[in-house]
Amino acid sequence: MQNVDGKVVIITGASSGIGAETARVLAANGAKVVLSARREERLKALAGELGSDHAAYLASDVTALKDMQAVAALAQERFGKVDALFANAGIMPGGNMSELDVTGWMNMVDINIKGVLNAMAAVLPVFLEQRRGHIVVTSSCAGTRSVPGNAVYCGTKHFVRAMLDSFRQEAVAEQSGIRTTTIYPGAIKTELLNTVAPSETKTMVEQFYENVGLEPDAIANAVLYVLSQPDNVDVCDLVVRPSMEA
Ligand SMILES: NC(=O)c1ccc[n+]([C@@H]2O[C@H](COP(=O)([O-])OP(=O)(O)OC[C@H]3O[C@@H](n4cnc5c(N)ncnc54)[C@H](OP(=O)(O)O)[C@@H]3O)[C@@H](O)[C@H]2O)c1
Figure 1: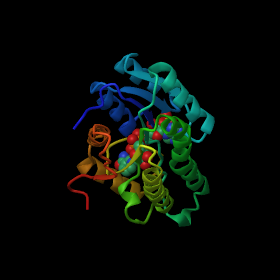
Figure 2 (figure 1 turned 90 degrees about the horizontal axis):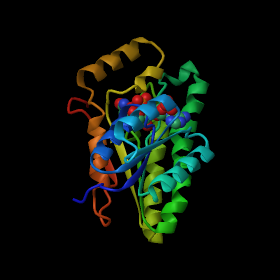
Figure 3 (figure 1 turned 180 degrees about the vertical axis):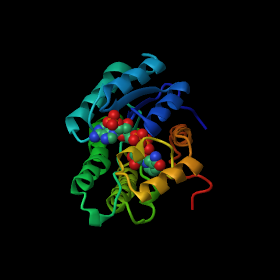
């Protein structure tokens, strides 16, 4: 296995949870990380913790293509290149369809689907030009099967799986040198459940996360693993769940 020393990695959803921990792990292994999320104070604190040689940040919203293009431009300006994108920003408001949380549905489509596409659209011109690049996207175990109580979220995470695998095959046919990885986390202790409305189901899910959920470093180490592979190895799909999660 090679390593990530000197690699420049853009991370969306870097202000908390999986994204923030991945930034820490990659930077500790010598990567340069470019942090993107909306909460600027969080990004500033994390970039300060990692040091200016290893981190840059830009308050940015994945739903805006121009924001993602500005993040890609910052990466090139500060570190001279982009080696990988970790498209990780996502939300999970939760709830049955019968609750008609139309705003929540549309926000999930905007962030979990269009946000991934915006981030990819921002880095693809760079990757195509340099004939090399790696796109890693956070799906979910909810992207491998359907479960009740999270229908639209499941749909957005299935989208990631289907889109990225089709793109992977196009990249092979076009010999563009671009690799793709879809990561499917199980229960990870982050702020993801904060946006779920209070309910009996939410309390049960919180208890489950508390009892068996993994710390975000389980996913951060998985990202380190996929980004550490030599150019001719593509780890395409990786499911990482607590050993006590069915
Ligand atoms: N935790 C789990 O059990 C679990 C399981 C499977 C998959 N996942 C996936 O893992 C990913 C990361 O989630 P997490 O668990 O680490 O939760 P988290 O701590 O809530 O992190 C979510 C991140 O997404 C960012 N984000 C949300 N909306 C955004 C927007 N419009 N523009 C830019 N950034 C935005 C948030 O930053 P700002 O609010 O500062 O913008 C935050 O940094 C998500 O895609 C989630 O679906 C999580």
